[in-house]
Length: 482
Image (tube, helix red, strand yellow):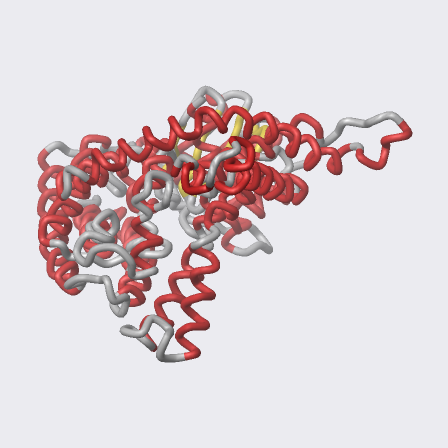
């Protein structure tokens, strides 16, 4: 089950990655016309509406992305089927259709059906479409129906399955919707404390990939909060909208880079150069883009207690930002790019105070991380025992190849090669590998490439944390497979 949810989290990264495009378009639009929101400038209106076309249709992107990511072949027909499934259920359960089915006035229809086109339904549609693809994409029908065999059968079966799902949702969706709204209201009702609890559990769920499920409740319109959408649309309450995003900026732009500096300073002398290379790249990624996994996975499993401290500090940051009602928002993650773009959004409230908070958190992170690492001799990068580290000279460069092919070759060899690797996939920063025998995996050899970490998540599942260049490493590994 855990493996299934990890695959789901990986699949969600594709549609989530579209958000920066919306953030850039809407941010520039609001920058041009911060008060009229497009009414006073044609170019601003064009950009804001273009960005809104992505934000407003995130559920459709989820349906397509999940269907594609969860299908066994990552085939386009699965993505098409995800769209088909979403259109079926949202049409059948729209307010207008439900009013006809029940023979009542549209104003009397349960409000839940007015919110049927949300991210939860998008994910559900994608999951069903992927299941139909995995089951029917190779089915051969009798000669008379042969045209509809194989992949052409998948959208048809998806539509049929969604008819059944729609019938079930007709009765249970109002209950699910109410439960989600109550959960969201319970957390939002706690104000700053609720934001802090959310931040804490968000970080704790990062290792499993299940943080995406938690994010969907607060960031999107699953439970009526829709913090990201409302912020970029500049709707809601100033100082409140954005409270589930703002506290991440001090952590991702300042806290974690400071933690990386502490890990560099506490590394063993002979490994400082290697550690500096890793921490510099990871720290810059966190500050500039908000991608923090290269840093987090560098110490998450080497020093789990330290990671719990990081999660607690994240919760504290969200609590403080929400308490003072300092707000900013992001389309992708809480890095410098999104911070700058969000400055001109009218609903942002005292966003520069997040920089002040970030500088304070940088000091807190550095002091706490350095103290705990030295006090308890935590095995953060550069402090591993000598017998667990191999010589890295030349480890990442293959003859006649580029740096990615060399890294890929070493990683693949450490995984056991063709004889042991059964599947290769990746998300935004991690290789996700299935192997026959975990005992044949040489983690030390994999680590000689300088990757931030290696994570064993099951008896046959292992993740190699590469960073934002993971796609190129995965492509090289796939070329090697026979």
